[in-house]
Length: 99
Image 1 (cartoon, rainbow, N blue to C red):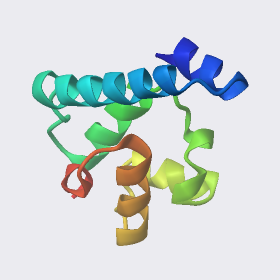
Image 2: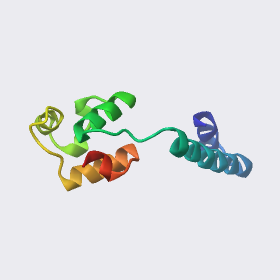
Image 3: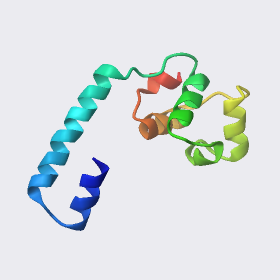
Image 4: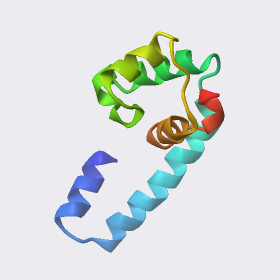
């Protein structure tokens, strides 16, 4: 999929663009049916998603400073609505994952 996207970005090709659109739809459908959203406590879910995406604390700038991210991950601080929305968008999961 990534190779197709790279190819389309270099040259316009309507047939490949259509293929990418179809593949994207099929992949999304497959993932929704076969890959469950993580369940558990909000911080556990965040840690799981960070691990799955190869992220470190410093990669979560949308949450705030390094100190704030550290406090969230250690359970000393709760996520606020803005942070939940940002994480939901970043990881393409329901906001309920972080509540």
